[in-house]
Amino acid sequence: FKQLGGILVKVTEKPEFAPTLGKPLPTTRRAVTQDAWRQQAAFFAFLRFVAVLEPGSVISQDYLEKCGVVRINDDGLCGWHCLAYLLKCGLREALTAVRDCMHCDRLQERRLWDIADVLLLNMDSLSTDDGAVSKCVLELKRRGVERGYVGGEYMLPDGDLVRLCLRLRLNTPVVSVDDDFHCSRETNNFSSLAEIAKGSSAWGDDLQKLSFDEAGRTLDQRGYFVVTVQALGQDLSRQDLAEAQRLIIGLKEHYFILDRVKTGATKAHIPAS
Image (cartoon, rainbow, N blue to C red; front, side, top):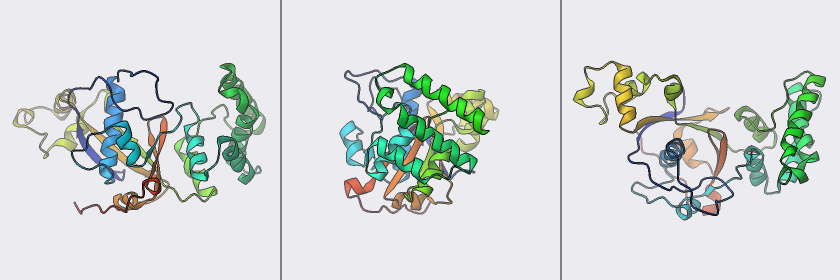
């Protein structure tokens, strides 16, 4: 793996309901889709990877919170909410802190300054006015054209979140968790899944005569997939992640916080494999 590590996961029958990872919590129970269930299973596998979940744990909303999983608002500003949580302040104060620490004579930092500034100017209307998001996007595009960068995006991608954590001296690793190794489902090519599974208990005699792609498709139909874990911007080991007091975890387009300080959890030791 080019990534920090990979996990071969098998999900059996999809449950009708599953714990909600983001906020706000739905007022009624919502059935979980197959894609959402695969993402959640990837997240739970990561928590096992860093020794947060014990084998055989029954996962519930309360149990995740006791393990230190902090639900973050799923409103397009989750990266900014993560920074606010780590800075122990509100969203407005976090945006102000980012704007204050950027050097506007550097193009990339000017872009981040503009994002924070535009969000601050529209803070009061973002949660109440459906048109506020479009207004922010248009203003950021205008500033990008005027200042020479590609503007329009107000959500924080992985690279920007890593950059801001360093600038704000938060000392918090940012980790990406991906449930589609080598874009198998996106490209409809499952040979990578078979290459990883070969030699494991998932590999049966019936797969031996098949091509890797055919074997991978069979494994996919049986509920197998590969989850990859990557520490962004830092060279960290699995043990480093297990010992980190706090982590920002990126799962597709949403971020979560794992806060071991909140739970008083002791540092976990990962057995050598």
